Image 1 (cartoon, helix red, strand yellow):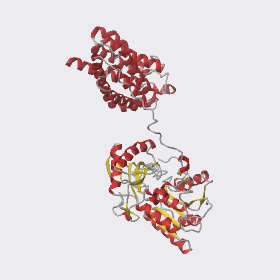
Image 2 (cartoon, helix red, strand yellow; image 1 turned 180 degrees about the vertical axis):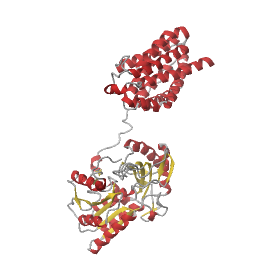
Image 3 (cartoon, helix red, strand yellow; image 1 turned 120 degrees about the horizontal axis):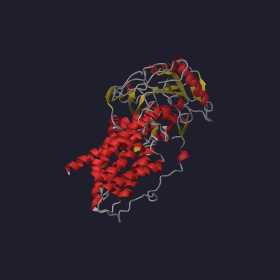
Image 4 (cartoon, helix red, strand yellow; image 1 turned 135 degrees about the vertical axis):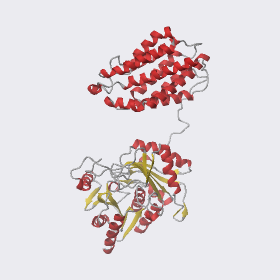
Length: 578
């Protein structure tokens, strides 16, 4: 939701005033929009535009190598004929003007009337309409323009900067449009300045397929998909709608991709999705030419993304690769001309030396049990991830659940990837290193180091491992946490539930055996974790929020208690069935 404004009715004009002030070194305001400062040589004027709310489109892409001017309408509203005419007049450098915009009724009418008015005055004016959205219509000419605006505008801007005449710039724009296909999905609707409700909503657990950038909902709602399946949907739908001929020749396998965020989708989410999109395109035999991932054509605060592919011939590729310098988009080939990929021959790859590693039968058997225990821990953490995040968010950053799940997942993968014949010490060491490397954060390094310490305590050269040996390894685990974390009992950390667990386990294991002692110790740990609600944190991120933390247990202490409780149940079941 837009929070910063004076009068919602003047939001478009007010934001444009700030934009022009910021970038006055490269563009200037004119009635109806902005135009770039002139270059040394006169060029064809490429004037783009539409409603506001789409930044960087449209005014953010005015500058050398891109648009000459941008017409700025009200939010999601076509600019008026007078605005389009005014900007084009200012952008005209005596070489003619090309208007370009998405295929919407208001834009077609207003830009069309402005073009006729300019022609009546002797200014040769052409129109290139963008029709890239494959979801909006089967017939290409009836499709609306969404993020494919960017590829068409970029191609025409590059052609103009190259010194091409009006006919060539128009032709390049139409060729780019013929070569471009887009499909978008929405996770949430956008909210107009001054409004409290979004223009549309997406049902819980769904996404809107085939959205429009003017706040339109998707053509239909479909169940929310994981990233790999969403990538499959976007890529396959575009490939099914691919052009077959480009400039009179069959299309090839070179494409310029854009994975575009629509307003509130995080860049990290887009990067994650791009990994799947790019892999699927590469598997289909495509060569990806200078992909773009980020916010290029947005829709206020809409949650969602779109994928655009522009199939390339030699001419379009030259224009796509050409330099550009605008407020929101910069491509300067000279900056990366000296870079080269690292040679695989020079890469240093760390490999484990297995030649001298041997483990006893007892160590190998215990290693198998450790793997199973790690898998049980993973199931528990996945089940309680949201609960741990909620507890951590009260006086922290809410990442404990996610961090623990990420860590245990890496630990299990590393443990299960080891070759047959790996003992418990090796399994624990590999799991600990993977946990620390993949999870990050405080809990990641603490758990990783503690698992490695546990492995060092056990060693894989013993002919047997007694219950006391197991208890000693848990003590080594806890000692590593205490030394590395520099915390003490009472500081409201995981040590508050670990310490009573270890104390009870070591005291009772010789009297009743490992499983019963473990269950007793887990009960003590759970009670201690609950009691941390009465403590004030003295270390870590929660310390400045000590008062807020009162009345709520510590997330680290809680997760440890959950894990040892689960392992106690497993040990008991294993003992009963053996």
